[in-house]
Length: 233
Image (cartoon, rainbow, N blue to C red; front, side, top):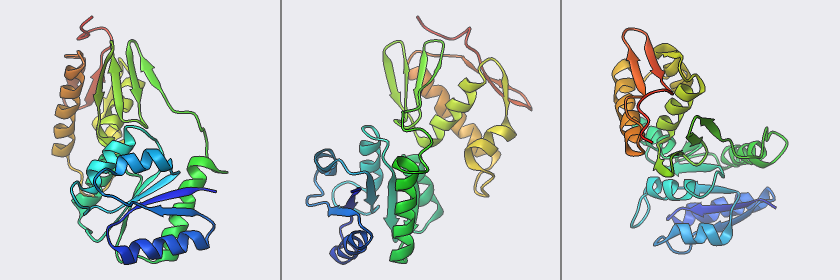
């Protein structure tokens, strides 16, 4: 039986979620203490996590990052905060989906079952963790971490996708349009300046683990990741 951990501080919503999950044959358990959700996650070992944004002490974004550092299980946010940036931040911090309140419980359960099938059931394409390597660099997309020469740096969801796109075509140009299409799927809130901001962050993350000047901007075209320069041995 699949286990779902619910981190929701509204007892009524938490209880209704448990009731519907049980109705559909899923084991559900609500967080008992919001002081350290990660401890309960490690103890329960759920297959999926439901997270509210507004939680006591630390918000859901914080706990999402902590869980994602340990697990690739599906994480779905459930929140009354329906702003665009809240949803972007959830995905940036490693979430798989964002459900806004008030929501239809049957539809929410259908989404939960869909993610469980993708991760563990009939739709699971590959249950092994993806690992992408080029030269001495290793990217763990599900863990949102990048390693080089024994050094590790944590990435946001978007930073990971950008680095994946660049190193998969190492020493070849990745166009700005292709990068935007791959990462954001042409969503309307993305503009050219947003990509520039993320490329600056990516360069800093690479520098943090000893990789400098490897990403070159090809003016008017895109970016290229060089495997033959900027690597501190």
